[in-house]
Length: 372
Image 1: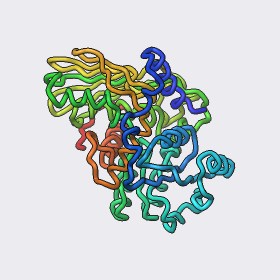
Image 2 (image 1 turned 90 degrees about the vertical axis):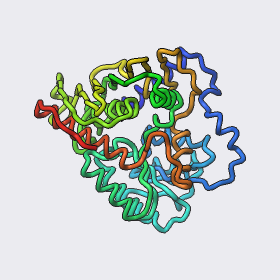
Image 3 (image 1 turned 180 degrees about the horizontal axis):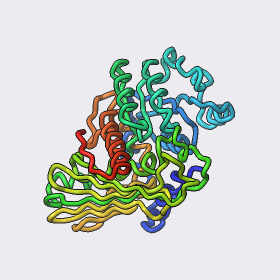
Image 4 (image 1 turned 60 degrees about the horizontal axis):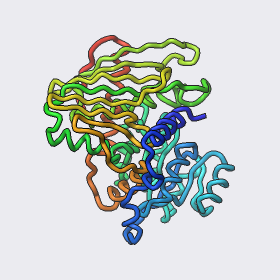
């Protein structure tokens, strides 16, 4: 069972009930006005047909600039099911042994990799060598070295490498970033990011070091790491971290249960964050400046993001995150559009360098200097 996905979904549904938003609020208004769109359409094959792959596939039904056209899976029954439900032709269906053959398929532009973290590097390199654009879920890889390998492979093949940072297109998040850039919070002094939930099934891949690359930090923790950077508007220059493990049976060697970590930024701002697999009710961002603040909870869930600043409630439109992300990715690939916050491999590599530094700081108990 996919606990993280269920956790984020429940957060979104709870927020929806509180906000009493109309069902139509889930649809990005721009989709309606773009119904007559006649430009290029990004034709995507999804690799990894789990619960998040399903979420992306369903979201793409409302897209006009991106379309699901293919699948890659190691489970034949899933391929058959997706063929029937999403009208995918047999010629666009592959398994993990033969998907290199997509290089001969002109009907696929990009492959969205939604598999365990430990598989991302090799899969991305194969996709790039097949001449297709790479879209990869976060974290992009299990460490910075593997992330750099992916960047190099995509550069060599002259294909795009984009990462599923859906929050970079979320309206309330973008409003807070706009306010920060406009100086409405004054000098930024502090950020807090809380990311966590209680994980279930001890046999799942997220608790397998080889497949996940770690524990909570390689899953839910990425939100606070990346969020600290886009909320503060700077990249950290030092990291400290402390690890706590209460269940050594579930969280074996190399699989972190809870890590508290701190960042220091060039301006003097600091961040204090928490990543955990043993506590619920954690999906909160808080940004504080000399002249104001922003607080978001839920801050990264799938459903409506909710928040307020010193000026009042954030009331930007509710969007279907994955649909907006795919529309924007099409614009980036075809038209070179520059998003407010980058979603390319270099952006993801910075987060991987920070994850490496967090693990090192937690292990050694020392402050780790970083250069991103």
